[in-house]
Length: 214
Ligand SMILES: [Zn+2]
Image 1: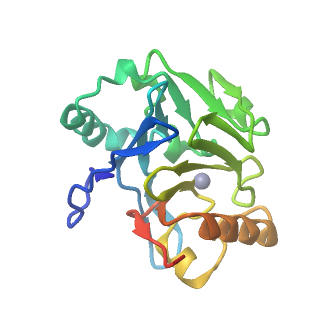
Image 2: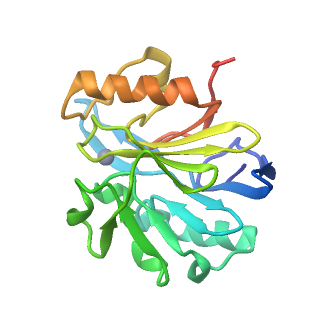
Image 3: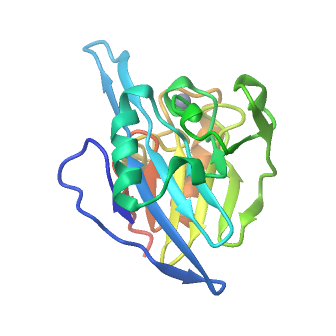
């Protein structure tokens, strides 16, 4: 896994794992961030954006914000992939800080949970609880929003691209559901499901981190 974006201290971790006889590569195009003012009100939020390449598909999970566009473009250049080669965008949910660069990927289908696809132009519903391609699974992780999904990637390790089902490291550390949620208990169940699965979590608004699952 290689980590790009406006975040110091995260070197290049390369993931080239064989799975089902196929190569799965995962790169973090942009490291998510979130800032609150003194009253706890969010004033600056940019989601993580992740590139997943398999033999069959080139997938971006969340496209972050316009502010992150230069960083994402740089990441594509460094990785050696053209945005036009992305064939699939998976959006973890419809909030604006996760969908701001959909327009960068002219050839991509936009996939979302059936409960939320109507909120984003051009998006079509996807099947949850199923593999998008072998090794890349779409998991319904509701609670932040009704149609929140996470992408579970089974490669050399188990990776979860969590979106805002697990927005920050602190949510994992304290097992506390996302501050913004439609149902606290449901959100907590989703958080636990992600934590049980993943060796590495890529949160919606923090750098990736290793879990202590083992
Ligand atoms: Zn959100």
